Image 1 (tube, rainbow, N blue to C red):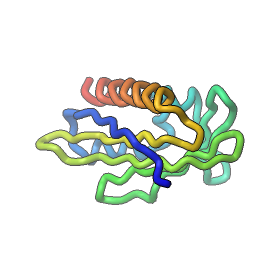
Image 2: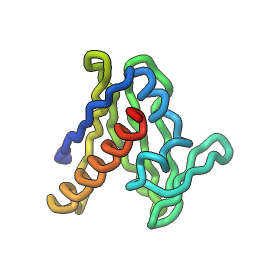
Image 3: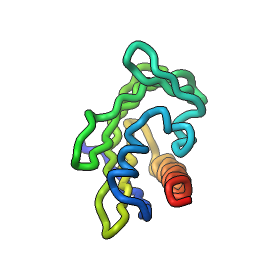
Length: 131
């Protein structure tokens, strides 16, 4: 049975390559993705984020020219969550699209709450990159 998803997006008035480069660098996560975690560290070739529930591993897709920022988050409990994300050219700027996916056992209310948190993170990203 497929999971349900909710697409959250934000237009950013910056060239897509600039936005992609910023988001693709896991060291920048704490500045815009505060919903994910507060600190990040690079250890043994892997990236880890300190979340409210403990240390999580974050692995982005290989760098590419298509704006694909898909990533996997391995939670402190060992569950791996696949997160689709894209930077899509839009005129002189771009649209950042993040897909919030319902995980097993997640209620519709929890999915909506996560979408609101992601929207806040994308709004923070927009503000950071446009100022």
